[in-house]
Image 1 (tube, one colour):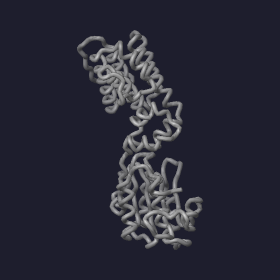
Image 2 (cartoon, helix red, strand yellow):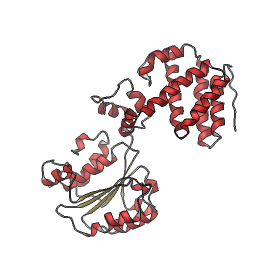
Image 3 (cartoon, one colour):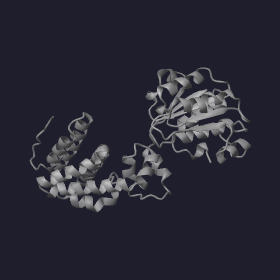
Length: 336
């Protein structure tokens, strides 16, 4: 059941949408933009449900024939358009929107089209949609859900009401998972890598891959400290298996050293991300100086910077690992 009360965060956005309904200033076209998993589709669907509600309020009544049809997934005048392909083509836009919108609503006030991953539309598809957006019928409403609205043509953007959804706040995410099946010792770690997205956290919870990478990172840190140069090159080779996810791997490594530094400075504290590994963090921290921890954090940041600049992948990781391994107080800086 789609209701505004169930939506996590985005109170300002919801209030603005409700005010447009109240004052009869609903636009014919919208872009709802933001990172994946923060509620864009839920807001679009709830807005659509409210607009079609026969009670004509600023929230769906959940009882009228329109609300019941919507909740059943069989509303005759609300259409959800999505694709699993790499792009959304012109034929899909022409068949599902451009031609269909010429027919008046079957029963309710509007014909509403919600296009998921709309920023995947080809230029040809956007041009086809533009013709409809420029001269929409009075009953037509199009909602484009995207993660990067800058992929749209400027003419599309200028004719749509742009709604930017910000990442959720940590407190909002914690409230959402308060009663859910989640390891609450892990929630801060999930939040740190979620970008403020509940959807991303759900994927991490369901993914053994996330836990696998973290366990490898923890092992690598211990092996860097205790191993020799041969071990460093072995670690570098293992890290190459995660080339497509290297930013995430390095972020996890950074978080681990950060937690050790925090523990050394103020002991066990609520700002620790890897709460479920607190004993291991305490033991690891005993062997690492502040100087070495600082060098390690800097080395990881340097590696990320070099990789963003398309530096040699293998060399960037080797230099990072060597700098982390260094025991000297002075840090030799290398460049490509």
